[in-house]
Image (cartoon, rainbow over all chains, first blue to last red):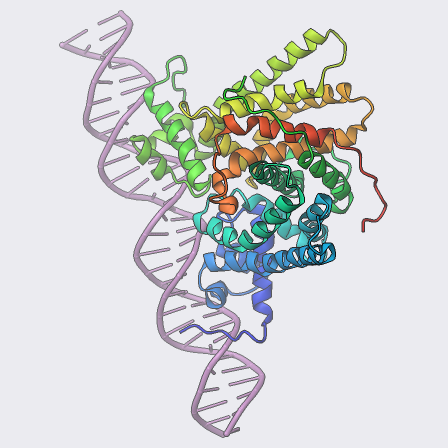
Amino acid sequence: MKAPVDRVLPDTRSRILDAAELLFVEHGLDATSMRMITARAGVNLAAVNYHFGTKDSLIQEVFRRRLTELNRRRLAELDRLEAAAGGGRIKPSRILEAFFGPALELASDTENGGSTFMQLLGRTYTEPNAFVRQFLAEEFAEAIGRFLGALYAALPEVPREEILWRFHFMMGATSYAIAGTDALQLFAGRFDDADPTRFKPRLMSFLLGGLRAPLAEYPDEAR
Amino acid sequence: MKAPVDRVLPDTRSRILDAAELLFVEHGLDATSMRMITARAGVNLAAVNYHFGTKDSLIQEVFRRRLTELNRRRLAELDRLEAAAGGGRIKPSRILEAFFGPALELASDTENGGSTFMQLLGRTYTEPNAFVRQFLAEEFAEAIGRFLGALYAALPEVPREEILWRFHFMMGATSYAIAGTDALQLFAGRFDDADPTRFKPRLMSFLLGGLRAPLAEYPDEAR
DNA sequence: GTACCATTCAAACAAACGTTTGAATGAGGT
DNA sequence: ACCTCATTCAAACGTTTGTTTGAATGGTAC
């Protein structure tokens, strides 16, 4: 039926992926039409369906080609930490660095479209589209599981559920820092400098402060 | 031309707004069609255009009716704090409570659709749609300006740009906590309890820890 | 040189989109 | 009783959507 060669990437495929990535950030997944993509990529309208099958498959591939590599790097860093610790405890700050570091580095790569993609990823975490959610969850499952386990081991005195929540909060803060800076102009004109390479130490400091914050009390009824 | 009465809200208007709010959360703004909205609201297709003009105006009204009240409550709380302090310093934790407290309370109101709306709001912060961004920015401008000013005054020893960033991070963490819990199943099956009333103390503790974190050093080149 | 096959292309497809229209409806004021 | 006017309704409007089709194109292998 449809079996495009995969050993050699014709330029068309990459051009489509790059154009789609850019347009998805500018207009969102739904608001980006096939015609917009093929026009910017300078290819024929039918090329997307020929190379990727459907628009959904194209979306999936836009994420997959970057995410696989990102999470591979994260897990490699974690492997290094665990090997170096040799069964001993790992400092939480190192774990955070291993998880959020690669993301922030990718977010500051403006030459190969990494920053574009990270903006896209940040705003797609809250995407309602069912198949995108499903796909992202699968792509992240392993990395999140591993890093949660590492944090549990690094902070044995903190309840696991608390760590779980704080990891969630940290991902939120990071995604917004990357995706939301120019996306929403809530802080318009207030940031001198939104370059991820520059705010990385700020963010890491914030995340670590949040992770280490004293445990709150949990009344049965708030207020 | 088009001047519907505004002193009395016919049921149709509210039914449309409620249905739209729900569907926007489920499918996103673009993926929700007029026909889906009117079908769920049980009204005629033309009713939306009659009552709101265009789909964009409807979107705007969905946000406006809740946001105006939310930010009014936030500013009222801040007014109280500033009056009580009488020119003296206000504890940062109180300021955070005044800003994020009302949002979390609205997020736990499942009876009047408040939680639905807060999920919608959380994921709309990163919405690429130009007119939505513009509108949200205007709606938030006053509150953000006031609260930033209050934090500057409460933490005079912290550089303003640092506070700005941390406020951004805090908004990100909060939005995710509200919008991302069930939206993306990254943490699927891991949360026992996603009720906002229950995670509020957790989040507040995390935010305060992040706000108070030691300042990072800023090397000219990271790594 | 010719047969093959992946790729490109212009054109068309049905379906769904937001919006408009003009007639029907029905409660309220005079 | 009659006029008024906000509201509802079924139907249609012209666009745009993602996808499909069948013919052209052009390099590679024999």
